[in-house]
Length: 157
Image 1: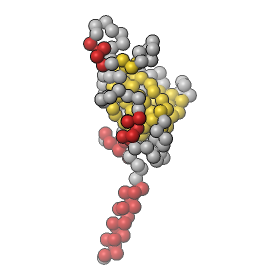
Image 2 (image 1 turned 90 degrees about the vertical axis):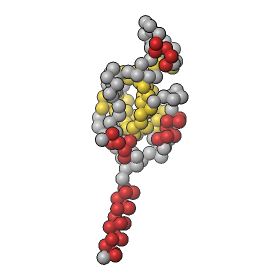
Image 3 (image 1 turned 180 degrees about the vertical axis):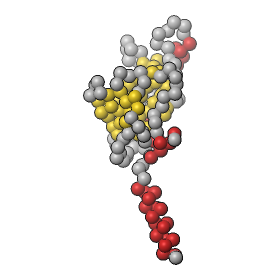
Image 4 (image 1 turned 120 degrees about the vertical axis):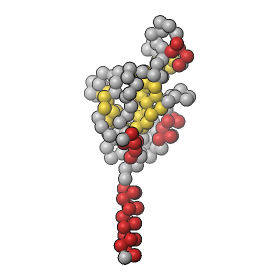
């Protein structure tokens, strides 16, 4: 009886070690990124990230205090022929980029009447950080008027 209990406990421990790293942060489905022509988030496959998610957030070119969601995913864009990842994909809402100079625009501009570059929570910045090396792979903007879009990660189930 004791041997059966020991084997059962060992099986549980081995099973826990075999689970994919950061399973709760992995992208579950193919998901179009709103506000882009053809970019999408895709499941990361058999990724085994060496970079911790908090290190990815620290290394990302995001403003201090940005509200960030994170997923371990691939980013694909059929039009651009792009396939990036596996990467830590960071989504920060309310971060705008000025198209004329590529500069980040502060949230303070959001209340200026008639300002076409106003920042709102509908606009988001998506940054992909290589899950193995920490290198910045991609930065794109998206737009989601509903404010409902977010990466489809297992932890949201």
